[in-house]
Image (cartoon, rainbow, N blue to C red; front, side):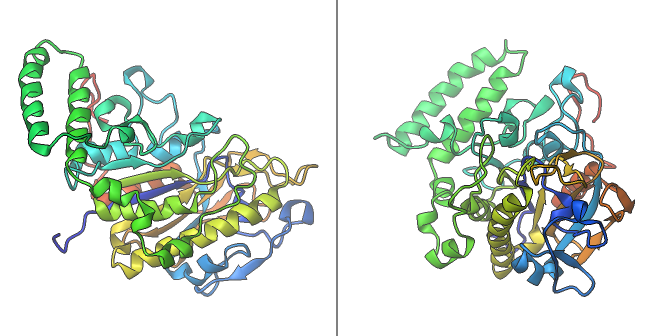
Length: 390
């Protein structure tokens, strides 16, 4: 292992739309029907206060940057903008926009041949778009995320075949395939080749399987992250899997470039404050553990964490003590990645209706993620199937 580590991203999607005014910018000046139940608390950075349900994050605010003025949300209940920076219909005629992990896989390839560069941990949700781990879009299926709970993982054990015999089979397969490949114009074979190659690489190493196995982790660290149980307010969304953040750290350490996951179901049309107390305090535990853990391993500058959802929520609290959809403004928290942290970027107006200072477009956040991976979005393009640079 060379001292220079690869750069990675852990993309934590808060599916459902977390209430921006109950997270990183409590509206103390607003009337009660807008302000809600939470108090702001001081953080380790003078002048920055966040919601009282995040005391551990507050203590390490010097390692975080909160963005209070995220704009550009298209309004769909899906992860697509947080995974790609674009709406769901963008470039649909050629396959759609590729997600950040797919772009990283295409541009850099794997860090270690036995570890996929892009892993999606999101558990399947009954509202399916909330468990989108990021699609490869026009780059094609060879750059799709590896999903440990998917069919791929079930085949990752060698049943009584030696590695030598596997290598012989691989050679034979290669000879047969080369004949078919010459007549394959669609690129389907190329995608299958990539999957086959990846599966064989993974089979011949236990690195990926070990990274996914928390019994190999120090039990004290496992306890520090917690498990996020009991799962509350889940309905058709993701559970609060605190352990996914720990698995994400283990995957990045093993060589994964981008890990995406869905955390909780934040669609708080009713019982908004109870939901935020539950989901928020669990997130406070595992996110602070992740930041601490990466720092103690000397990895924090190389790993960018982003925590965000698809939009914000209405300033006015509804009759069910909930908040409804609000696309005008949203919020995000970022940490690590060698960024200038210990700051709050932007602000909303007194009622939390719109960005009053420094609006930050969702695409600017995605561009920052690319920048932290070493991809200059102003200079580097990827041609789509029609040959146009994107």
